[in-house]
Length: 251
Image (cartoon, rainbow, N blue to C red; front, top):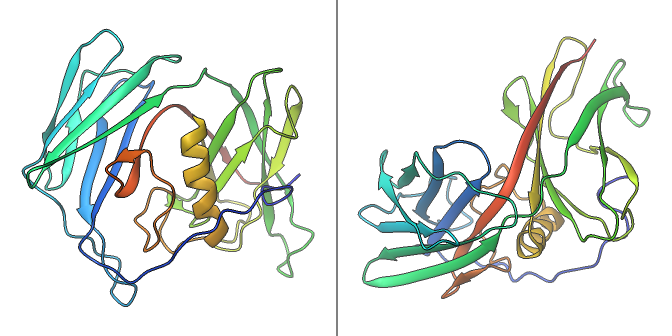
């Protein structure tokens, strides 16, 4: 199976507006730091350099009412060293900047183990020896699950966005190929795959970006306005998710 099969269509309105607030916020199950990045978008005609938004008040609250303050440094990047997300828990974010308050909520899904990653010959490539990366994992039965994957080759992130739900794979053992044309993979390369278990809102967000395959890497700012879980609506997202990484050396 490949990521682009059996998918519904989400219409996006592209624009050339600039100066809008962009929030890229993540809470994971790993020991910190957790990162929330604030910036402003730029027009389509500009380079991908996004001005940071400084001086904001950024907090995340857990289900027990504990509030975690995110401290700025470097400019536009806010971090917290003590927050560790727990699967099944709902987290609430608050960002106050320029006299406005932006809020969002995200529930961290249960952890699904990424069993392994492998490689094989890319039979559709015209380059001798080029490889295709495959991920392998067991999808839990009778539970809606959504996933996002990041692919790195020699520490460089592939630009493609890979999002998947289990509508057609519920309860099955999944073997998924990464079909991408960004970075060629050959023997000797080191490959890292990050697998994130995301909630339904985040799947909609990342799948909408996958459709247009933006220029930036996963989590990068885009000139479109995909469905966001932030109120009032801005560019970006707040995601509470589990995450894990597997590494292999192609031979």
